[in-house]
Every structure is written in C-alpha cells, then in structure tokens.
Image (cartoon, rainbow, N blue to C red; front, top):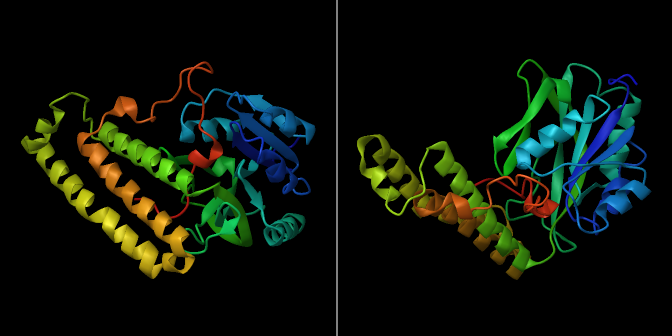
Length: 306
C-alpha cells in the first residue's frame, strides 16, 4: 500500500479495557488502519481492540516518548492520528476531520494539525483549572517530525520547514475517574519530573549528594531549583484557580488546582532531595517488569506543565 494514501490511527494502551472500545469506535469511519500498541495488558484490552478490527502489536514499555516513537514507526501510513486509549473524538471533531480528509486538505505543506482536548473528571467536563483548551498536535505526517519532550510529558514536534494548522472540535479525554486519581497522578508525575531534572543535571543518588549544589558549578542550579520550589506551585494555583476559572467548579476545581500546585512543588523538591530509583521514571526492561502505566498516567496529563 502507498504509505501516503491513508491515515493510521495509532493508540498506545495498557489495561484499558474500559476505554479502548470507545476510542476505536470514534475513529472507525476515518481510519485507513487502526493500530493498537499494547504493553502486555492483563485485562481484555487486546481482545476488545482486535474484535473491533484493530491491528494489535505487543511491545514492552520503554518510556513514554520511546513508546510513541516506536509505535508511529509500525504504522502502515505516513499520516498518523495519535490517541491515548482513554481519549475519543467528539462528534464535531470527527465530522470536521472527515471533511478535511475527503477534501484533501491534510495533504500539502501543512504537516501537523492541532486539536483542543476537553478533559474530564469522571463524566464531568472541566473547562477551567488550566485544563482547557489543552491544545495537542495529534494528526501529523510522521516523516516530518518526531515525538520529543521530557518524560512523562511528550509532544510531537514538526520540522521547522513545514506548516502546522488546526481543526475545530475537541478530543474528549476521560482523564481521571475521581479526585483520588488526581492526587495519585500528581504525586507520581511530580517525582518523575524531578527525577528527569536530576538526570539532566547529572545529580547522582547518595545520602550527601545535596552538598554538590554548594560547589561553584552546582550552586546556581540549587538556588534556581530552590526558588522554583517556593514559587512555582503557588503561582500555578493562583493562575489555574483564580484566573483560569477553577473556582467555578466548586470542590472539584479547588482540589484539582491544589494537586496541580503540589505536583509542581514536588517536582523541584524531588530534583533537589529525591531519589531517582524510586521515581517510577525508569523504563521496564521486559514484559516481566512493571509495564506501562494505564493511559491516564502516561501522557500528557491535562493543562500546562509545572
């Protein structure tokens, strides 16, 4: 088949039996191919995906960015619509995207398209708290870019010589089932983000490694991180709760914004004083080791990054 003749929908998943069917159904009349890359699920994710006509490949989880780059390379077609298993296309987005495909609007110098993402707490759509419009580039020509970023916050970047565009409509993201999941995710991502900073700045794990910050080459890093530890979380809470409308959502908005603040604060606390080995940032080495977290915890969680 001509790799430029259609669109592959690529979905990464692990234990997403409750979501994968809805995700696949929302793209069934758009996709030339539906590919599910599964990290050895222990539920019925693979069975459900296959029953709906998806091509299912198992691949051990090696990291958020690594997994998505590997997955796009397995697609039959160059144009890829990338979704997480807990996402689906809203009817308006599906309609607009289908029209764009039929009219050939996606085949030109524009090599990537951005969609708004509407995040949910349970079944409640949240348009405040910095969670909306949560723009994501999800439709792109794989030959014109790559997944990049810092784990666990991945993004697809198009080469600078190409144009990007947008298509109206929302990806519906069923992000968290309840507020307890918001809390757990914030703690997990705060640690992963802090460990990524430790790795980038080559801060080794040891009982006294904090002393390295006071040597001339490291002291600047210490004070920058310490300043961010004191200010980033608070400023994020003020922005998302007061300016971006978190207050409109009552208790839900308050708790969401609190844990956003906590995640940002924990990220820099972990960068200064944490331990990489307990951060859940390391990629599993095989399917026997702890596989990919559920899609909720993988990607890009809602809103701005701390």
